[in-house]
Amino acid sequence: MRPLAPLALAGLLAACADEPVAPPAQTTQPVPATTLETASAPVPAHLRELSGNLLDIPSGAEVELALLTINERGIPQDLLGTLQLRGSGAPLPFRLAFDPASVARGIRVELRGRAHLAGRLILRLPPLAIRHADSQSLGELQLVPAP
Image (cartoon, rainbow, N blue to C red; front, top):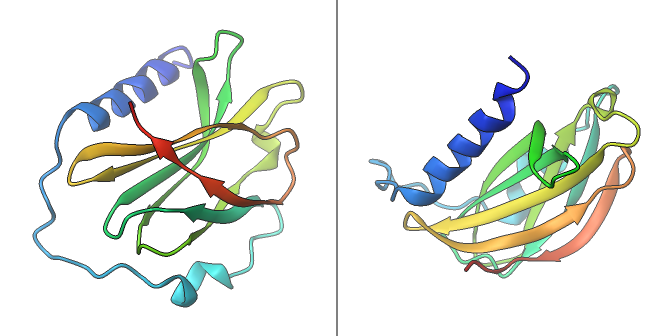
């Protein structure tokens, strides 16, 4: 069962990247950065978090961040945490919680991200190595145009 997890994750990511997504039936306004409920909610004692701000995310863009373990061939192995946000045109704060017990010693861990607008991949976060399974602030992160 474990060898199928990376294949399932890769299939899910490929499916999301290739097919345009129909806009939702109800339109929702982006939540302003200052009113995010998760910004002040404490993290449970057994979890850790990565936090920071994403810069230059267009208003209405859907952003997905994923914390992944990566095998020696550079392929995602396990999903440690994921977060979905909507851009507001301003710096977009994020807090991604994860369980440090699921990070084995010596395993490569990366934060990856991408942004979609109108069902099209527009930006991506270059893989960011996470060296310690502790709570940490990553500061301001810049996404780059997707190929």
